[in-house]
Length: 190
Image 1 (cartoon, rainbow, N blue to C red):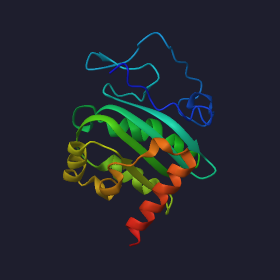
Image 2: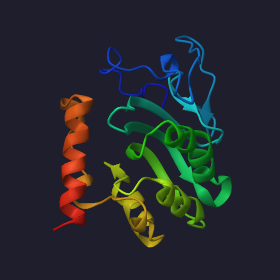
Image 3: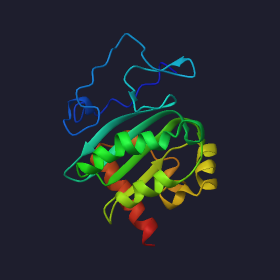
């Protein structure tokens, strides 16, 4: 797992630790020391700690002008044992919302498992977004999407269908956002 790095092709466009509106502003990273682990497996030092012992993220792009951010995720999303959604909502989403972000793209290729609990934080997050705001989950594994669906998270996060295998790495962040915005608009207004 220590070889899985967050997407770095956009670092010339955005670095969360250099963004004074980012929850990770001022963070310093080691290229040589592994400081975090998920279940005793070291993970790459570029992943950001959100307060959870099993879920890590990287804000790989944010546009306050357009009101969106792209987060890549890593680990196990465990609301049942660790209340990971609370950490994600309180420590990451809320500061971003306060700075004008109201559209969230969650890249879930590296989420290994999901364990649901209550949906209160999902509902709260969804309700705090502006009227045209949204949360989209892309490229989550099939079993994770099934768990999302069983927990009825589709009320708050758009996932599944065309969001399951979207080739986002070939796009720049603006193109990626435009595609997601177009797809969610078509989904909500058929």
